[in-house]
Image 1: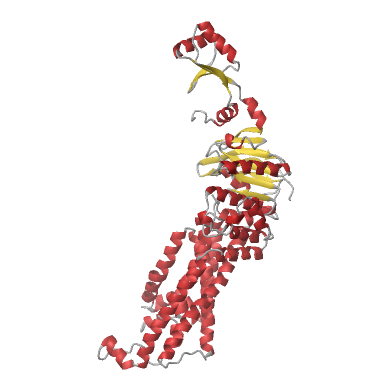
Image 2: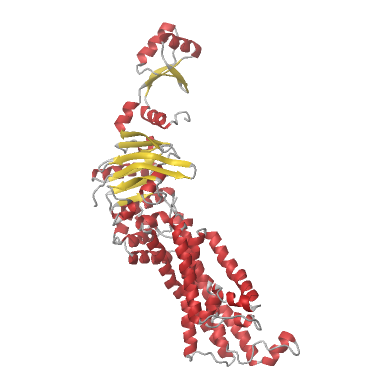
Length: 281
Length: 299
């Protein structure tokens, strides 16, 4: 047995069931609708600032979109700021479905070196996470650029900064795939893993980030939250608009990437030294 | 084909918390024969096999293939073919299931259609396993064991869930593997299920070895007995007591510890008792098995 065989087997496991393309389709639709819809709304608000301010707060209401905001990176980054859940789910399922369907027995019989199997899953889900990243940015850039262009605004597609952002976004989703494997091997139970992903992504982290932005001290900690680190890596996020006036801090992009990689590696190492070594009954 | 290698289990002990599942178990399984690994449910058969296959860690002792633990085998699927619980991802087809593990073990993918045909499920190969019957799953589990054309087979309850045709097929299949010089270890909780296909038996009960030897030696252990009954049970009991014969109450009459029905008949004649049944008890093998594992009272 060698590592390449193990990685090949893990890819085959993913692509011989339906979950990967179901998640890819939902991801594409979710990101596309969100980026297209908000792109259209924010594009309209930018093109008609007075009407938008009146609609949102009456006379004296603040501008919906602060003047000078670059909409393109904001809208394109929906691919990572809301799409990151998908590689996490697929990565977690790669581990938990082995427990759920009791397929660890044939897996470990074919490849008794358990750590090789686990890190093959890790490597595989990094690559698949990058693939989901390409899908997500295709949706956000496709729908978002169409909406912006509809209001005669700059799509940023001729700027290398935009493409660098997309590249960092794809890297972010790749790392989220690795975090999914780490989460899966720590939790093992499939239902629990799915609930944790959804509750953490939709409730706990957003609340923590807003709360953390209320003071300097908490903000210094809050920037290490995985979602915040991911946004730092990508370089733009809806959250930077959602917490106006707060003291939200952000890491450098490469620091954000290292935080994500660190979470993924540490979770996988801990899971690999505990649950993954247990008796398979 | 890889050579048959003996399975060697020595001093094996496995505990789950306060429960000792297997205690100081030792036996050897030789190539060229089908060995039945027998015991009632909960006797520790599956635990023993899981330790042997490196899926569980023993608390003491060793379980090896010719001295090499499973995890240290250089090419495990090409040395040992094992099936434990026939469990699969329900959304994956049989063909893809086998392709996944052929890839993992570095086995040529041409083996996949070959083993699907060998177990007779080639025509269902591209259906999702979720729709398979238990018998088809058992056959797919066997196909997995055949992937690497190994010299050793370790099969946990492979007959469970098969229809009569499938049972007939697997008996011939196991015998053919053994005739080719391979080591074949088959577990079952029913002796009657495997007695037509095994040469040797290893019997465990409550985690301990109670018997090992040839199937024929098990037959010798079963002392033949006589069943006798009368419309007047009380008179029969008196007659047997008078003749000094030992007996127990059974469903079909009194089971007498006497191999010769003629002597029981004589005792009844002497007592002047009318008989409604008098014959030799034939199911000695199963009786012997049940008395060994202490489950005789349940039937």
